[in-house]
Length: 111
Image 1 (cartoon, rainbow, N blue to C red):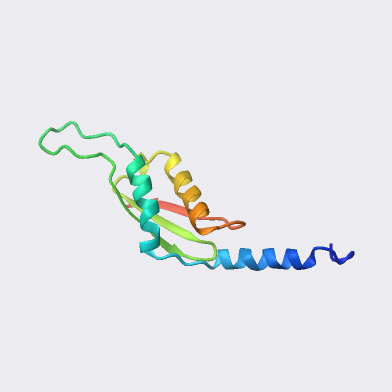
Image 2: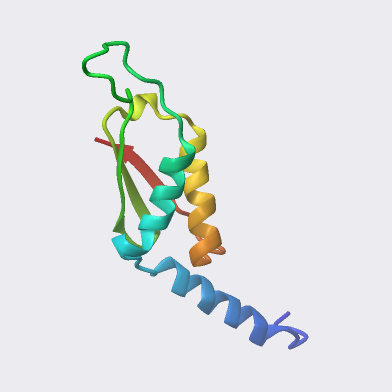
């Protein structure tokens, strides 16, 4: 504590680390492995039309659109059909790869 003058340096170091995480910018190229991991693990439903057989929900791109706090945009063709687990998986992968400890991450899903 500040009164006892113990662990003040560690606290200040932790605050500086969180501020670095809060202002971190990640390139689209660095986000590609996360996008492909999510895309590879997601098994969407398919249309029933034989000639145009394709997934109902198509995952298109993941990019960072803001900092302070980190804000990511996940582009899909039908945002309402994305399972709730997908944003949680993206957040977990971002935290594991880029150490966003102590920072709130915003993940927006849209077209």
